[in-house]
Every structure is written in C-alpha cells, then in structure tokens.
Length: 297
Image 1 (cartoon, helix red, strand yellow):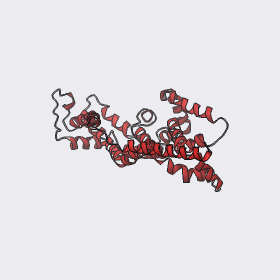
Image 2: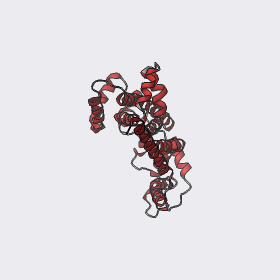
Image 3: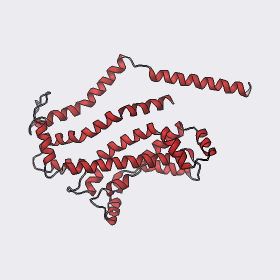
Image 4: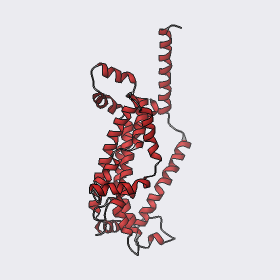
C-alpha cells in the first residue's frame, strides 16, 4: 500500500470515527435513562427542600417529628433575623466571600492553564518528575500544613486579612493536573508548531491558541474552584476573626449560643446557597457544552 493510499484510508477512518462519536453524543436517552435522572434529581433536591421546610418554620420545627411537608410562613422573618444578627456581620461576610471566590477562581484558572500548557506541550528537563511531584501533593491532607501556614501568615502580618485566604489558594495541584490532561488531548502539536513558524512567542501562542481551545475545561475548573472557595470553612475559621469573616464562618456564629434556632441557621444557609444556584444556572450551558466537546473530541 502506497503512502497516499494509506493516508486516505486513515483520514476516512478518522472521519467515520468522528461521525460515530457525534451520533452517539446526539442520541437521546430512553425512558429508563430519564427515570434514573429524575430519581437522582429528586434525591439531590430533598435535603435542600427539607432545609427550606425548617427555615420556613418556627424555632421548634427542626425538633418536630411530625414536620409538615408544606413550608410555613416564617422564612422571610428567619432570613431577616439571620441577616440582621449583630454577631454575624452578614453583608461584610458576603462581600469577603465574593472577593475571595472570584479572585481565587480567576487565579487558579490562569495559572493552572499556563502550567498545563507548559507540562503538556513544552519540552524542558525534569518535566515528568515535576508533574508527578505536583500530583503527589494532593495526597497530603490540608490539616498537616495548618500550623506552619498560620505561623507564616502571622510573620507576614496577614492574620485576619483576605490575603491569608487568597494567596495560599492562588494555584492548586488539581487545577494543574486537570488542565495538563485536557490540553495534551485537545491541542494538536501541529498548531503550536505552525504558530512558532509564524513568529509567535510562547505567551502569544498561549493567549491566542491555548486559551480559546481550553475554554471548556477552564470553565469547569473555574466553577468547581468557585464552589470550593465559597464553601471553604476550615482555614478561614482559623485565620479570620468574627469581625472580618467569610460567609461560612459568619453563619457558624449563629450556633454560638446555648439554644440554637435551626430555622434561622438554615435560613441563612439557604441565602448563602443562592449565589451558587445562580452561578450554576448561568454557567450550566457552558458546562454542558464543555462536557459535550470533550466527548466529541
């Protein structure tokens, strides 16, 4: 078989494979698939709905064994109590959480994509062992680094500041691993070589070629990082004071009494969940698009 014939046959096989993957991606599931998804959706919504039932009741709702499946009429009252509680400082905590989550998400996406491009497409000495070392750091529990990290923050004078939350989270090992794997599979080497032939620098290739191609994976990474930063409680609880908290730390102060009113606590928790629900609704289309593009590729 000649080289031209072999190349034509290979192109035909690749085309048939792409068409088959596209057809599988566009095929609608049957009733069994929809029934399973409906069951998963119901089980996922149930805890949230139970929280709403308790939040819309009075102080004894959480302890009532005959809790009604229909919401009461006290949700707005309980939400106002959670927001106006002087120990919580709700609006400042909300602003701090937004600042931390947005900054950390943008930083993790940028640096992880940059590092992923370097590990996936650039050739340098020690690339493999360095990537293995970065991945191995994910096996180290966060709790082991709390004491030295706290001492370092105290030395910098960053205790009870947002820098103490943002700077240690500017990049993470999972983001580097995630973007490395995606870029290695989605970005052909020929495109990078063509950009170099045209005189583009490495950073110009990254900005004009890598970022657009890696957008689906970057969107998913940004979404997961935002949720993790928004719900992070352990480290902010240690390094921040009640006067300058993030939202999870502020909501924990609602339980710092002899009697815990769970209707108020869960009302505040649901209010803190609203931004995440809005984010998933807004980014849901891009998230599904990224998953589908990855499946087709």
